[in-house]
Length: 185
Length: 292
Image 1 (tube, rainbow over the protein chains, first blue to last red):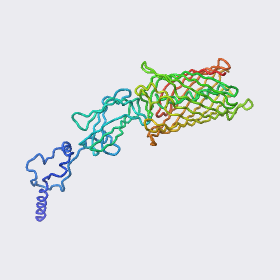
Image 2: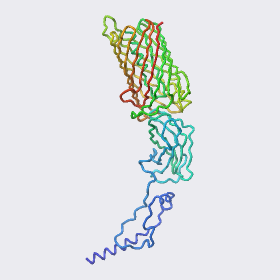
Image 3: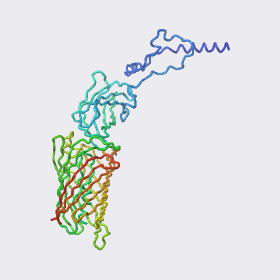
Image 4: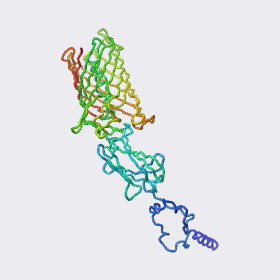
C-alpha cells in the first residue's frame, strides 16, 4: 500500500511539470488574435503561480486551443468550394418589388474570423425561372468597423418565389461563390 | 357540330398556361376551319388580371410585373384541302400597372391541322380526329431581355420559339359534346447574355364537355393540364424548375348568323390541383369569328 502511494505521488509531481504552456508556432498566425477573442479566459491565465505543481492528478496531454466559430452552420451558407461561409441578414425583407438591403457576414472555411475579405458582390437569381432580379444598380459597401462584414443595397427581386442570393467573395485569398436560398413571399 | 369543334380547339388556346405572370402567353392557334370553309378570320380581346406566382413548392407568392395584360389576337385561316388548313396568329399585348403601360407585338405563330377522321351523318358516333402541328416564333421581348426589369411592362413573350404537335379528338354530333386534345410542346433553346437556355419539353392536355342548347347557343366547360420538364442552363438542369399548371374555363358560344360566331370565355390559370412554378390569374376573353 505504501509503495502504491509513493508511486502516485511521484506521478503527480511529474505531470505537474507539464502544466506550463509554451508559446507555440501557431501563436504567431494571423488568425490567433481573433481566436483569442473567441476563447473564454483560461483559469490558468488568470492566477499567479501558473506552472506550479498542483495537488491531485492532472490531465495528460495539453488540449489544443479552444476555437469557437463566429457563424453556426444553421445560420450561414457555405460557399461551393468551401472557401468561406456567409450569413445573410435582410434589413427589411426579403420582399418582392422593393429595394432591398442585406448585410453579409463572412467567416473562413472553418467558420472562423477571416483575415481578409475582398471582391465582394451579391446578385439575386431565380433558379426555377432562369432569370435574375433587377440588380444592376446595387451597391456594395464594406463595414467601417468589421472587416468581415459588407452591405449590399438596391437589390430588386422581381417577383415572389424561391430565389438565391449568389454571393461572390475572396476570403483569405480564395475566391468562391455561395448560393444562399431566399424564399420571397 | 363544326362550331363545337371550333370551341373545343379554341379552348386549347384560351386556357393557355403562363410560365410566370410576366412571361408571354405562348400564342396557341385560336382558329379552326371546317371542310366547307375556305377563309376565316378571328379577332379576340382578352384581359388577364389577379396575377399571383406559384412557387416550386406550390406556395402562392407575389407575382411581380404588370397588373393587367390585355391581348388583342388576330388570326386568319385558309383551307389547303377539304381536310387540311393553316392559320396565322398575331397577338398584340398591352401591359399596365400603376398608371403606366407599354404595348407591343407578342409572338406570332403558324399552325396546321389535318382531319384524319371525319365523321359523317351515316356514322354519328365516330369522333373527329385532327392532327395538329404548329410553331410559335419568339420575337417579342421576354423577361430575359427586358429593358424594364423592375416593372416588366415590356415583356410580351416567353423568349423561346416553340414547336408543337398533337392530336385532337372531338365528339360533337349530339347536343352533349366532349373532347380531348393532347399536344407535345418543344421549346427551342436560346442564348441570353452568354448563357444557353434550354426550356424543358412539355405536354398539354385539354378535356372539355359542352351542350348545345339551340343551334345558335352552346356552353362548354373544360380543364387544362400542362406539364414541362426542368429548365437547363448551359446543359445543367436547374433544380425545382419543372412546371405544372391546372386550369379551368367556361365558355358561352353564340352564333348570330351562319357565318358569325361570338365566344365569351372565363378562364382561371392554376385553378385547381397541384401547380408548380407557374402563375395564377383570371382572364376574360371575347372573340368574334367570321367565315368569308
